[in-house]
Image (cartoon, rainbow, N blue to C red; front, side):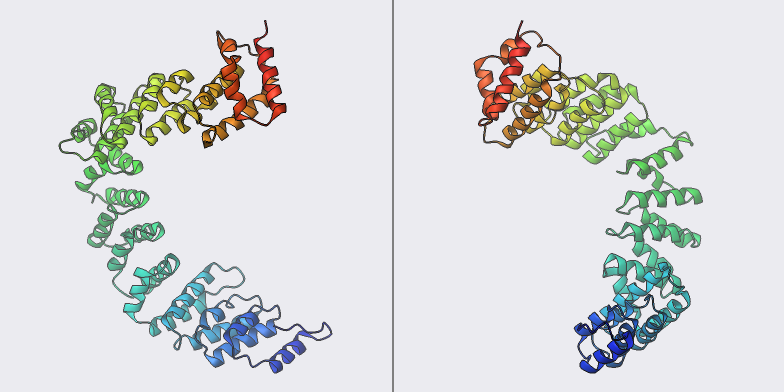
Length: 450
């Protein structure tokens, strides 16, 4: 777009622009629709309406909430006039834009939106709208859902049953459950029971809660005791416990590997622990050697919940497991639960590995334990590995903070750390950094001096 002298008024600029351009090009009109002058934006809207250019409708709709009343009015008129001749994709894109106006604060669009919706529904076919709801992107699908629901464009039960089954949009599934509560009993029950199979735990919980409130859950509540989402299980457990149902016995039966898949065994282990079933501790411990890593992790978690005082035993057992998820659990025991493990014991279990490096934090509180751990790892770590690079950073941190520590070496620490072979491994980590090497030697000499 050309820019004109500041001596021209906006109206004069507009007239000059209109005379100098044919205004037949959609790309040019898009630019004009964003221009600072309301004269230009209004004229661009009116020009788009007159030409009926393919693809223009959504751009015109973008001015429906314009800050200039005349532009808004022109956009409303143009959108209604252009709707019939637009492609389906343009119509749907415009529908999404129009629905967003419900949240606009500049002016109340409610009355005009109703007019647009009636026009839209008279233009688009039921099949096209249904397909747009089922296959469109999230925003479009939600918009079509609300439109179909409010205008009863098709049976509401059909809409909600499809919505509650969505595996990609939790908002759509949750809304379907919410609106299902307003249906009559048979239709409501059908939608909510379908909601119990939802991909989303929050939706399954909401569906179960409504079914229980209406007394329509039946035996399905028992199946929810093995739901993978803890809040669903908790709701089912609370309901059945109030009816003297033996929850512990149910979960004990679910531990049978001959009849239960690994996922159910995992849930049963966690649930027995949640119920405080200390009498089942031995059975839970036995599953720490199960073939499934998920089952082993659940067994460790259940063990911790029932007997938190055994966390020090648990941490070594968990680090001895090769599954990454269980070693992560072991680190959590150190970080969050304050479990203790001797670094040398962990070194024997893990060797110079990422897993061992990730728990070096546990020795940083003691100056010489920290350096001993760095030296232990440096001894068997190739210098070209990323673990060596991490160790070098760790050693630099030790050097910079060692001056403030007043701890003395424990036992043979001083002798072992000042050993020439140990020093060589440490210095190799920061090779070429002579000043740091001198500081390292000085700290060790000072710390080991009588």
